[in-house]
Length: 249
Length: 249
DNA sequence: ATCAAACACGCAAATAATTGCAATTATGCT
DNA sequence: AGCATAATTGCAATTATTTGCGTGTTTGAT
Image (tube, rainbow over all chains, first blue to last red; front, side, top):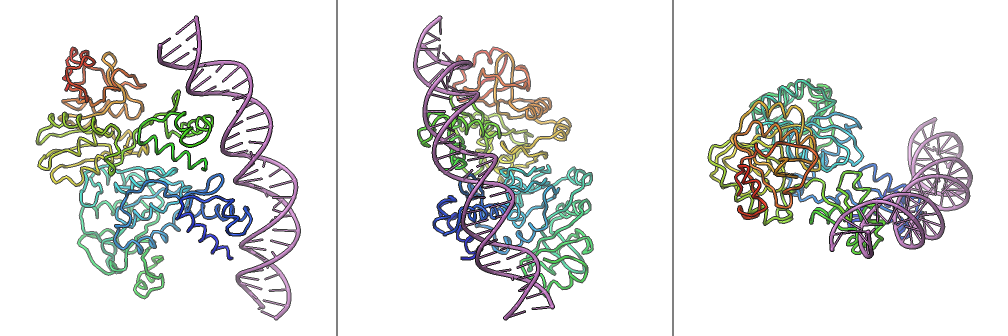
């Protein structure tokens, strides 16, 4: 039995019973407990499970009454989130925008990730509120009910006075020539301010948003460092972005 | 049963009933009382609960916007919310604090109520986000994960520069002689600032909190205009408050 | 003040984790 | 293919964690 195979089996057992014991796994999979422990350690580092003395528990021990399965295009967004996660390092200071893709992203943050997150999205803050190591700062302002994000002039002030390692923004439209666009004026102003203070700008967009235009410009393509979609990074659709120096993944 | 598993179970029981007894836990989880005590001690060090002689209490009530029926003392709090609602008029500007009682209150706001609500509680903002006529402004700041509220110095600044018709605050302790008290320093500072800028100060407190003291003073009894409990307004327990000019209801 | 319940401390047994090391197995490269 | 290198695995010795029990102390309700 291959290592990967075994690890998948471990995860599947964990899925069923919400907990696994090192001793039991060692018997049922015919490997030493050491190996099981090494597997568990590895999986724990990937955030796939929570390693504890004697075995492991599902990370989703928490009561997520959150409607994860109601997210549109859940699979695609999860894939994008996984790609985005590779860009994040311990001790980073991030600004994370609204949208379900970002919600997906913070949902897969491994438990040992120690970062600081600034956000204006209430669902994002909520979901991070039970993460053990992440510090969350929520920007305040008037609540835009439709998207459950806050906006306000003060907020743009606040943002302008900070710096962050990276920002993760979704897009309502992106285009090789024009750049990143936004439907809502207030949100566009907000994102404009965010882009200015971040070393690394990461845009997450499903391919259907590519080459669609919206009313308000956030920034030109030259400000964007990474573009994440659900497609293969060498897709021809994305060639234009690669040519302009955007890291596509 | 694994240690972590047990601790999670303890926390989950605690969440439901707001208190746990070492003896009961020892029986229901089939471990010695020593083990329970050690668990409680450990969890207390992590700030997950407050250890007391004989068991443990919740340190701060974590609010789940979704699971209304699990709110502790739901009936009492609903009753208090109904009383509080009588104090609210159209076009009011209110500051509403955290806690499940306030959550209950905003839950029964009639759909045609047109007011402006300032809050630092994320669950409150969430719940109001689907109300058609209420404008919600969320104060920003560092997220205190246990209670899902935000705090911060900026926030006190912001509050000091506004005025509101009334504020609705829960109490972690109130006493005729001392006044309103709070467990957490940062929250106490926050409430202090709020009380200063509100024309009408409404405190909501279950009777069990009456005459209990906490570490940090928010304000004296003279600043409090209304006291809402689940008891009859002419209860003898509340006589002291009435004598000092507090409207008890 | 009294007394049972709750607690803290140390100890010992059992179980689990870690580490270094050697044997085996996979992988990449010419 | 053949070889070098890296990864994986099991083993043994050591270390750490968990747990229950005995002892003596503290607590808090009457």
